Amino acid sequence: MGVEHEMDPDYQKKVEQQLRQFAEGFDLHQLPAAFHHWSHHFLRPGLTEVYGQIDLNDFYAIPFIEGAKGKNRPRFLSIGCGDGANEVALAKRLVERGLTDFEFVCADLSSSLLERFEKILEPSLRPLFTLADVDLNRIDTGISGQFDGVMASHSLHHLVELEHIFDWVKEVLRPGCVFAINDMIGRNGHMRWPETAAFVQMLWPILNDRQRYHARLKKLYAEFEDIDCSSSGFEGVRAQDILALLVERFYPRRFLAGGGLIDPFIERGFGFGFDLAEERDRHMLEFIAKLNDALLDNGQITPTLMLAHFYKEPGEEKFYRGRSARASIRNPNADPAWTSNYPPVKVIRVNS
Image (cartoon, rainbow, N blue to C red; front, side):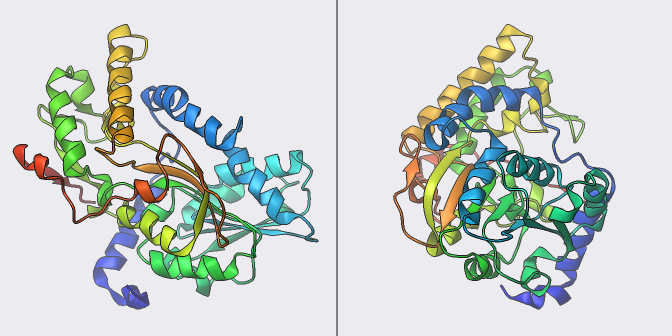
């Protein structure tokens, strides 16, 4: 894909849908309690094994500080900064750790989100930030210079021109510096691959009505129906290509993968249906999470999220429970034969 999308009417329509969603005050950070319960009990152990006793701020801060060594005023870049909540917290952590003079370039397509970013910037932090209103698919036309660390927090799955962006990052990233990513790597549109959908279908009848109610679409689903989020805006538009394209261009040093079968039960749609004050709900969620881990460990399904440190230079990869970067890539043209025994899942197209 090239920059010809600039004149593509469908591309422009999706841009408008995406901008409208953010302009309406969409909460980028609200997640159900089910997600936090799962992440603490089932994702946190892997994070600790691969990265040590850190939080998400240190996930970026530690390699950024390493890349800044010996630099007068190091430069960092956030691709798709959104409302800046993550970047401001990261900047504070960098200052706490002794890095007090740097330039943090934060780029996003949405001017409304950048306005929200501007409002939360404390006066002491303002000199450290440069906010850039730019189409991320053409980020090279709005951002220049070299960087001592690049981050992408849940932004890559909104982007179309992944090959172009990754090639550009490889050019602007200084030697020995990190491309740190926290993002989704499942099927396009955040849909289920057939092998994962089969297990979701198996579990669906044992859920109660509260757990089968989609909080955002305001609808009860007696049967599981997959939602193609990419049909409106760019949500998950090329999610399944992200990891494979990264591995072609970079070397993973630390890689944590998770998610999969568990996703529908902990996300913003159905996740709010699990009341963790109820023992039966909690046990159900934990049963699904344990099944998810078993299927990942057996290679029967592939992960849908990653927290990864990539570099331009080769190095030993540290990963969790056999889930290396290469092992986590799902070939989109290789559906397991046994999935043909299950009826196809109805797909919902979300229009805006």
